Amino acid sequence: MLKEQLNLQETVAKETVARTKALTENAKKTSLRFRVEAEKCNARVAACELSRERAEAQVVEEHKLTALWEKRARDRGWKDSDKGNIRP
Image 1 (cartoon, helix red, strand yellow):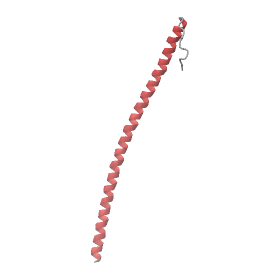
Image 2 (cartoon, one colour):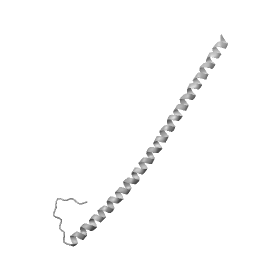
Image 3 (cartoon, helix red, strand yellow):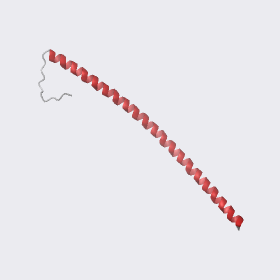
Image 4 (tube, one colour):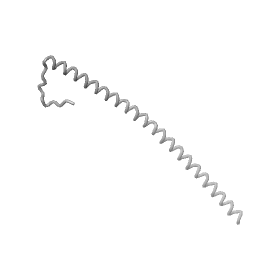
């Protein structure tokens, strides 16, 4: 009976170890998937930020160019007829 009890405990221990190994492996795979997705997300955020910075620089340049053309037009006698126009 004692031998049977020891065999049963050994079987339970082996099953527990096997289940733990399977769970650990599954957790590693899931972790890797999340890490890969996080890296993709970070790359996309970086690309988006770069695009935003470029667009912002283009807007600044466009404002400068608009101001230059407006100054040239005013120097040549152009008057702004729309007084409700808001300028930055």
